[in-house]
Length: 77
Image 1 (cartoon, one colour):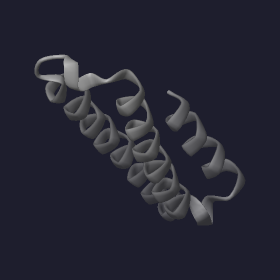
Image 2 (image 1 turned 60 degrees about the vertical axis):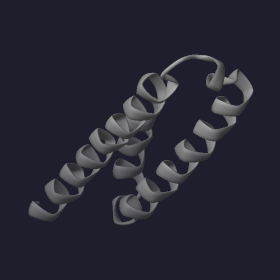
Image 3 (image 1 turned 30 degrees about the vertical axis):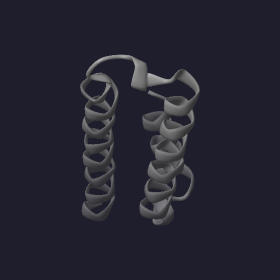
């Protein structure tokens, strides 16, 4: 929800830089994923890839789709 809120705020404040902000948020999310993964030692959990990495990529895909919809909506107006 935080990422969607940030995308909406960036869309209202600086809509011309929304694509760059989306790339930056994905990079930040990717970095945080590695920090959390290393701190919590997910390797000890069997099949941790299915419980952590796959939902991460699904949520990143949905966030990207939402950002593309906002960018296309702004171009139509």
